[in-house]
Length: 199
Length: 150
Image (tube, rainbow over all chains, first blue to last red; front, side):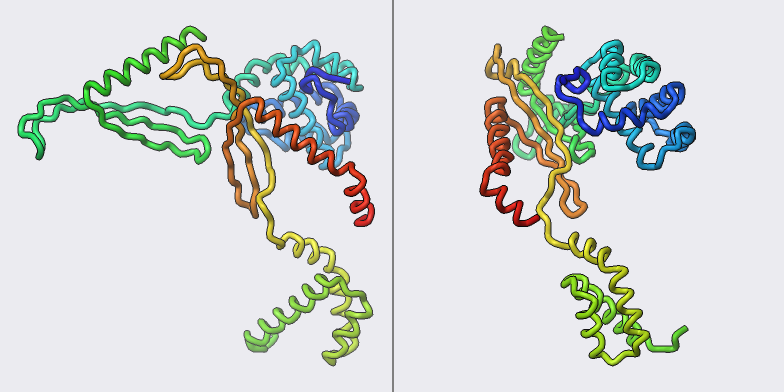
């Protein structure tokens, strides 16, 4: 059977198996655990001790606690990935055997944070490099060893590029004559106009 | 504390670890182990201690030894993105889809990445080839070998 929150594929076996573990926790506590898992997915620190306290009533072993966090992470991030609305998610989770209260608690937490989650996932998407900043300087060359009177403007540009792989910022400096700079600017303005037609 | 020279202790530790790793490596039986150390002329009590030490630790030693074999870089995870090139400096009005893949690999605790780019038809061909490779496991030839290993 295909599920939208799994990307229109079958639900993975391990998720199916852990749904019964989720049912052991009370629905109120499950909603609080969801809040913690959402914090982790949004890049904030997860408070593992709080989760341990919340699961202590259900008498879960440490392996089960980790499995609970893993399955909640999967459900929430996969639903956000495939842009599933919270009603569909709730009905799909109930089809998998999650009790109604648990499903609606989970989906309410999901609904609150759905767009922040999607923003975060968009920011984490694969990106090879990113322009950090641009610095420039305009000089006027008076004279050189080759020619006594040069009298030409010169543009110094430095692109600070954030390399995605090595997580470092690399500075790419260059010097351009006035003409070259005009050509660069014209081409970039054309590219910008094309980008604006897509926005 | 033992009032013996540093060298003697070092040789003792080296000898003991050699004894245990070689025995675990070859997975020798109790009787073979006992016969081997009998030659060394230790007391019976010491022989029994050594045997117990061997039996208690051999599984763990074997699992550590199995990780020492040289390994090729192994798959860790994969990130991908689908882009469409609409225009370039030389040509406008294009539609050129491309899939960019970042392969994360593990090699002996070193994490490396490889960035690859392909067009959708090459990607489909790649998927087809990999599925064929998986399908090989179901042929009679592979099934026979797997059955014999088990």
